[in-house]
Image (cartoon, rainbow, N blue to C red):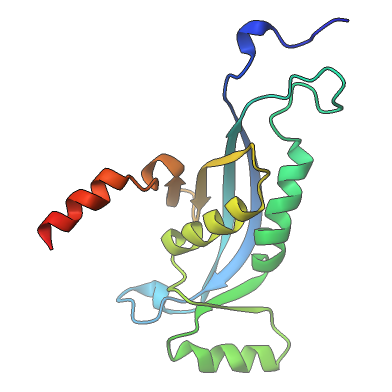
Length: 173
């Protein structure tokens, strides 16, 4: 039987990236600039996962870390389907009244527990995607592009809890 994956590639990690687009409106309550007003963005989300390619020659997804269509399904169901053509507000601010008015007029509104900045949205997205990934696949990074020149990034390596850091931080309490 012919094996399509060489022994040298066995157990090597590969990163897979899929990009998504969605339109979302938001307003930043209390912000001191234009973004305090309701406005929207054409968001671009890049999702990168990491894992080892399947080496079982009898597996229909031989050579894949994850089928792009499986990753697409996860991100569409968790992020795109909810956020596309919706307006997101922090539900802990007076914007709740505007949100209720819009919902009463049958608009798609998301009430978040956070200020809907790109930074907070990418944190939210990371949690949602990680919860749905297969056990052998890890979320490596996310890039949420709000405009042509502005984006927020999340990296797993920046968000790993290091026990020794936590223990050392207690020294200063």
